[in-house]
Length: 184
Image (cartoon, rainbow, N blue to C red; front, side):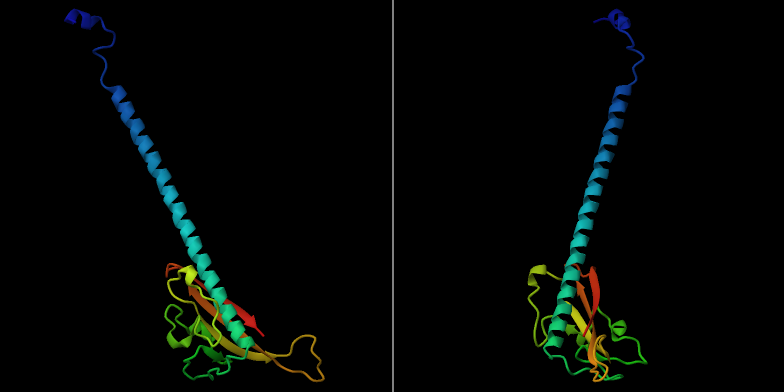
């Protein structure tokens, strides 16, 4: 091809590489779109893992509540700490002039101020399949006794009432659950 033939080609001198520029823009847009989709996917996986960890923590805390209720029903918890005394067994008496015992406990490292799941006289079922970061702990507070509705007032018998507070973590120690029940 000679110069004369080149001059006859349409738009030869006017092309400046616009096709390359547009192709690169499409490539950048496709890359950004792919990154956004991947980020959304990873966020969904993190949310699912957090939900699983929280569900494990709630299940473990519920198991601790059941262990405490079972031990109370069998008469295993009797040595409740008196008001003002240092607690070493996780069993607290009601103190009208003090805040509830569960408010004063450092639940992430309770030490002897709480009962560790599985160490009670009647332990609950194993939680090893949950792969928890640490075992659940709980305390039992002996509240004032009450007369149950429907009971004869000619010979009323006070029924003991207990507040059980359980704390557990999931597979990650950053996920926790604190549950409570009133037991009589």
